[in-house]
Length: 274
Ligand SMILES: C[C@@](CO)(OP(=O)(O)O)[C@H](O)COP(=O)(O)OP(=O)(O)OC[C@H]1O[C@@H](n2ccc(N)nc2=O)[C@H](O)[C@@H]1O
Ligand SMILES: Nc1ncnc2c1ncn2[C@@H]1O[C@H](COP(=O)(O)OP(=O)(O)O)[C@@H](O)[C@H]1O
Image 1 (cartoon, rainbow, N blue to C red):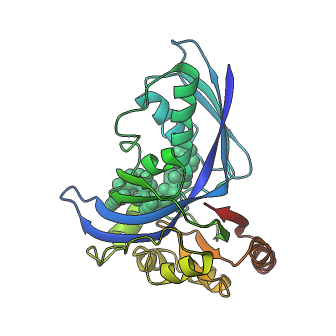
Image 2 (image 1 turned 90 degrees about the vertical axis):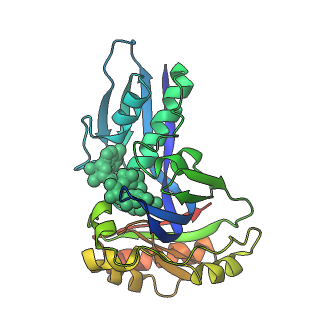
């Protein structure tokens, strides 16, 4: 049997770092949404004795590991399940949009559907702090180090542009560069707010990793500048991908075309975030 799952890009609309645990992991408060662009994962069940295997193809396949380091295979391993996977990679890696985590979540869903294997009780947290929210794959707040995920209702669809300058950013490097580890909490999300009001609220919140990521990869400053004119422009996760929110999809598409023309080497995509 063969099956397919979509692994959408994750976007942190806010990302507040509010403390640090004794083991070094940072306490986060984040409002997370998902794009309609992402990777596509195919799985075909082998026999129980087959070792899981993976082929990675597509426009962003270069440099993505195909061995046991890949989060798809690590997800299969934690579920003690086997399949032949093909990953169609469309999201840039190490980009702050949770590509690997979303692929791991897609693998868990597929294995559960195809073979009845149980999704681990930690919802994939041991694979990565972003995996539990990617398993939900809808608007949510994420707290703790990523283990406390609560669905958020009543957000308007957000017309947006995602821009990545094609430099990878290591998440541990950004956390290591962070100077202020105990920042104010995220305010209560205004569920039911209209687009303009939500953008105005987001402007009062933060991504506390932005300054550290800018230090690691100064080009992020150019990306944010290129998104000038958006209702809100901000970095997602530990970067380098930034998003701009626009009043409608037409405006987002025009902005994407303009940025692509000015920076042909960058990854630029209009999308709707939900
Ligand atoms: C920063 C965020 C925000 O959503 O996104 P990305 O930039 O990765 O997309 C996530 O918390 C990242 O999640 P994920 O990429 O799954 O992280 P992990 O593999 O668990 O952790 C990579 C490394 O980041 C640091 N880390 C991660 C999460 C966290 N709450 N505190 C940390 O200090 C640790 O040094 C850890 O070893
Ligand atoms: N399926 C996958 N797709 C992309 N990268 C992966 C995958 N599995 C493991 N990796 C490794 O994880 C690292 C972080 O990738 P990714 O999850 O895309 O970043 P981020 O956490 O910044 O969103 C990559 O540099 C890559 O070596």
